[in-house]
Length: 239
Image (cartoon, rainbow, N blue to C red):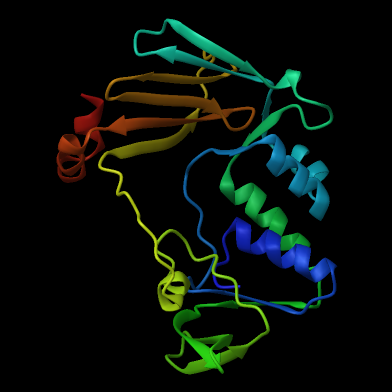
């Protein structure tokens, strides 16, 4: 599996539980986490239950919510989605920090002796035999070439997937013109403890608790302001 994101880790665990020997490779030299809120929807909760970490995750400083409010840019209500209307037991969602859930997944993977993880492994090419992919060649942290042979190669290496490109699989990607500013902050006492989305033409703001004392904010930056904010810094944005 090329790509040690959450999807790669979960797939490695599911395959290992079935008895397969798995090699998980990633070009990063160590795990990295971004300061953002991660929404685990009901289908995701079911997968976490299947790999055996949902109960442990709920003991962490995560935030459980049963509904989400959508409002226009002026704060007027548009609609509310209620998760309680879904069948139990997965009739809620969790908002978590990526670092917390990733660590739990990695700890679970460590229980399996048939999962090997290789950090600092950059994909270079596919290995072919008789028009069939039989593995990958990677460059290690020591700048040495190494081959991994397997009956199945999975590309979990992101939207710009080198695996997909090496396979020649056609794909059209629409680049997103705007940018987002994200931050995890201490929660104000008067902040309503619910998930809110504010949206309109050229406007998008998400505010969500991610633990008992912190919340996550995501603010749309129109494309004509992205470069200016990058040059002038966050103080310009605050003004």
